[in-house]
Length: 266
Image (cartoon, rainbow, N blue to C red; front, side, top):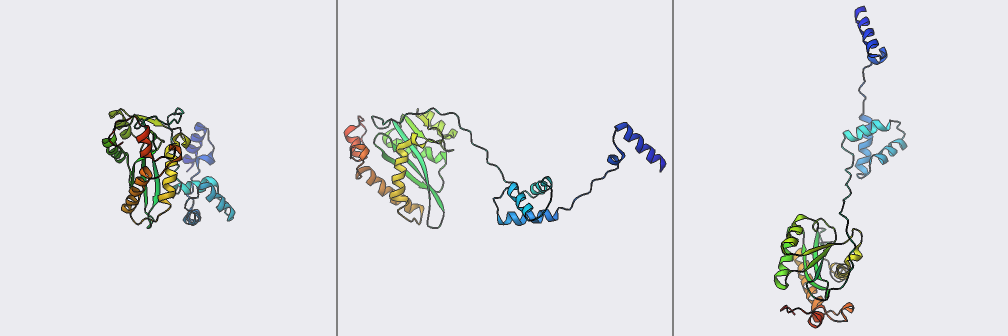
């Protein structure tokens, strides 16, 4: 017994630590109460982070150390995932000028809405900046980059590829699929500056009209119904509806009078 004490004493002297530290053994704490308190809070408020959970625990009269509570909080897997901030490459400000002919610049954007049963859908809107013509509006549950390029090809088969295509910085637009498509067809991609929708004003104004006259006007039962109503509206928009910005002419009539293109569509 004495030999053990002497050995422990020599070890402590050698390591320069106290006998208390040498002989200390950690006691496993019972965190049951903390777990129950956290689970009650999170069950009622799913999106509350640790700070608000801990403040609520303190308001309830518990005096647990915040480090201990945070350890239990993480063990339960309650810590919220932080979405990293998306970093965009620097974009140069692009002056928004009306092209003097068709197919010089197209604009493209997405819109979102929901069916009667709550299922969400999106629309892909493509217009020609020259005469604001609705080249294509597609309604679908999913519109990936692959589908976007397919619809661009469908439009281009009838009227040729544009010289440039203006978009925002959405994931479908900055993908390699669209960039490869643009390189293949010699189309210049113009990205607006993040948070500057005015740089894409033609499509933004078009979206507002489409929202007011179609998406907000009807309660849709199916994607097919959305597409059917949209197609009828697009024809009226292009051939019947006068536009003040086009000298009170329709997009088709404006192109007929002011376009230098020999395209058979005009």
